[in-house]
Length: 80
Image (cartoon, rainbow, N blue to C red; front, side, top):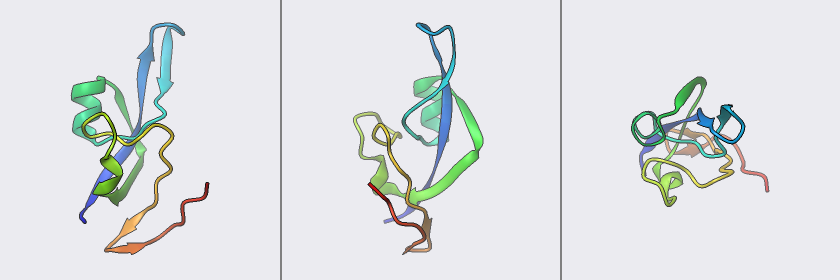
């Protein structure tokens, strides 16, 4: 599968009246268009596109732990 770039992002939490970092990661276009969030640029990481199989288009599951994708080879190990 192909690699996609995902980012952490911040969204406004009305109950806390402040910006909070989402527990998901997402592609830039999904963060900006769906979540209306602010991309945290330094958090970008390339992952396999299968990581985007959540209930929201362009986002990972909640509490997703990224495993880096480097030309088809695994760069890190996901620890549970």
